[in-house]
Length: 208
Image 1 (cartoon, rainbow, N blue to C red):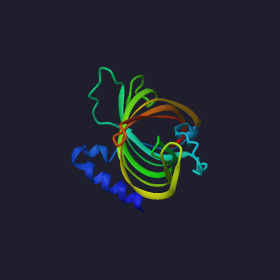
Image 2: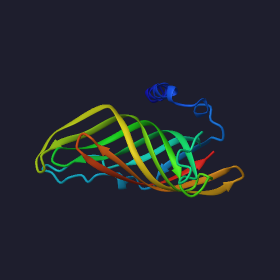
Image 3: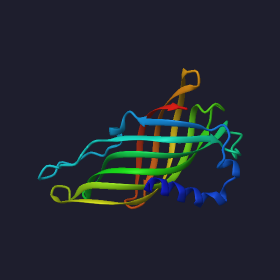
């Protein structure tokens, strides 16, 4: 329910800056997808005394609605532009060195654009960006590099802004169904700790 309220608020915030066709899209597609290498996005769990006890499980899966943008401001360089909304669920380990380590689960709503550089058929090399909000819960502990302090649990909301480099591949597996596979690298700047985070993924999904 909370995720649906976040999506509704996000749509209302963007409606004044969008064309009507962006909210009643033509030629849209719906995709269910998941990351097959989620642990590659995990930070390392430090060796502390006493030993760390943080869940190192990881996953990422989501649902995406994608449709052609009404304009292409980079027509000389970009073959096609796509808008998309995504609802995703993720879990992973976050380690801020000499400060804290925690297992985080999150539900997020994002809006983004993909700029396909090689094809007008939603495939090939693409650059993109996305922004949105996440609702998260975490379990972890504070530490100073060698000494572990008391464990804690917390939850909250965060804004998301990131860039992405990806390569979309599509395989026909049915009369009206495709398999989507795309390796990607995400780039996100953590303003709280002045860190650039690199997020590798290999996503696999079904297009409906």
